[in-house]
Amino acid sequence: MGRKRRIYRRRRTGAALVLIFLVALLIYALAAVREANRPESVPPVPAAATPKLDYTGFNAGNIISDETFSNWLSMDEPSIANFIAAAGAECKPGGKIECLKSARFTLEEQGWTQYCRPLEGGKNLSAATVIARVAASCRINPQVLLVTLQKEQGLITATQKNLKRTSYDSAMGFACPDGAKCDPHFKGFTRQVYWAASQFNRYRANPDQYAFQAGRENEVAYSVDKKCGATKVYIENSATAALYNYTPYQPNEQALAHNHSDRCAQAGNANFYAYFKYWFS
Image 1 (cartoon, rainbow, N blue to C red):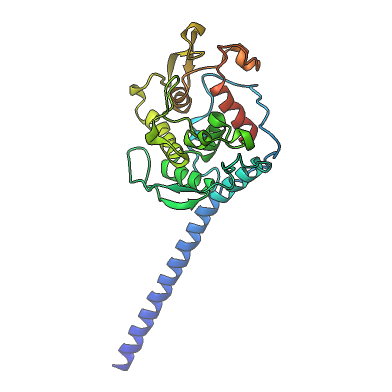
Image 2: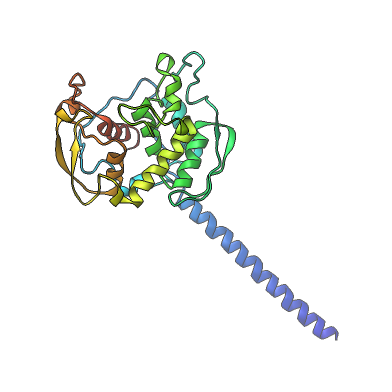
């Protein structure tokens, strides 16, 4: 009996050692994967004023690649926080309106949808936390969200008199059609960020339901004023199509020349390109 017990103990000890080895190997593998997916460091952001808009290289049919648009691992939460702090380093509150770097928000929990994974809610959250959670939930590049905040309301660099309640209420310009009031259901920073991200994915998941589609020529207007005309643009990818469905105008030559006194100069998508290029390219 003593011999059998010793053999059993040896076998049990050997099995335990194998299990420990396998667990250690799994931990090492997970660490390697996490390191491989670690966001690259984001270069320092000039803390002065609004970035200079350089439209050089703008391609109306390919504003941003699908791969870049969907790269939700491009920045982690600390990187986003550092970016917002650096870009808004000189920001001072606009009366009672806080700077983006110091503002705090309540984020509503969201369940699984066709376009986004479950979203963890919370209170007293920073803008960086909100953006990081939404980016992970909707698998969208947080840089796209940051640039859209700047393109729509100048919120990344806004300070003092440029900080208004609407800066947050319609932060992403979502559900704010031209010539009409914004839908109050989507009012507020966190709702704007989440539902805009979800909408971008909706465009890409259901291209046949929207006016602008990748892989074909699309009639794209220069302005909300139909008298300004339109030209055909061959849209090369779904990310660019999503930008046009969100902001359905292309810049004319005057817009690209910074002649914004021209009533037909609508630079929204060109500004998206220029901000992204300045900060992240």
